[in-house]
Image 1: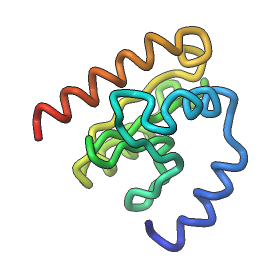
Image 2: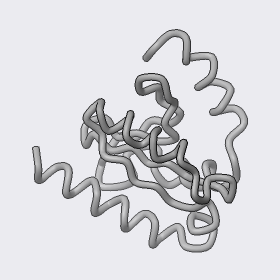
Image 3: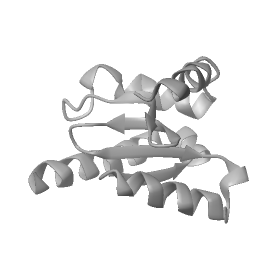
Image 4: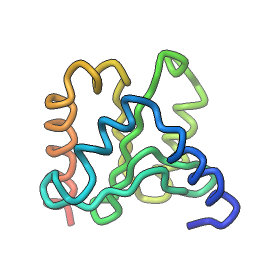
Amino acid sequence: MEKRLTPVARKLRASATDAERLMWSRLRARQLEDAKFVRQFPIGPHVADFVCRSARLVIELDGGQHADNDADLERTRVIETFGYTVARFWNNDVMANIDGVLEAIRREVLIARNAL
C-alpha cells in the first residue's frame, strides 16, 4: 500500500456511503465465491473502493456526480495499467438491486479465475 495514500484510504473507510457499507457487508469475510475483498485500497495514484487482489478485480461504486465524468475514464485506464479489471456500479443499483450487482461481481471473479 502506498504510504502517502494510507491516510486517505483510512478516511474513506471511516466515511463510507450507504451503498459502500451495504456492498462491504456482502463482500467481506469471503462471502462471495470465497474471494477476499479489501476496501479503499490504493492502486497507483488512486484509492479503489473494493479490490479482490487474487482476481485482479476492482469494484467502483459511483454516485450521480460520476455521470459522464471523463476523470473516471482516466482513473479506470490508470488502474487497468496495474493489471486490474474495473467494474463500475451505480450507488442506486447497489441499494435497489444488491443481488443483481453481486451476481455481476461473482461472474467477474469466476472469469478472472478461469483466466489465471
